[in-house]
Image (tube, rainbow, N blue to C red; front, top):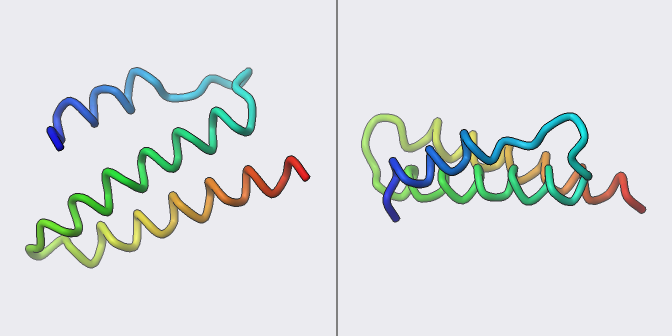
Length: 68
């Protein structure tokens, strides 16, 4: 994974207020994937990156549950 490319894509692809819950959920899942990747690299920020990944993943699931 190229972190710079992923971060740029996330920044440019951030959902607008008009985005659907599915679009926002997909974006949060992409954020979670980036944080999981960074956590997997180890280092002093690995625990924080894991926490951010969990938070983004949970937000994605919450958005999808709202649809039902």
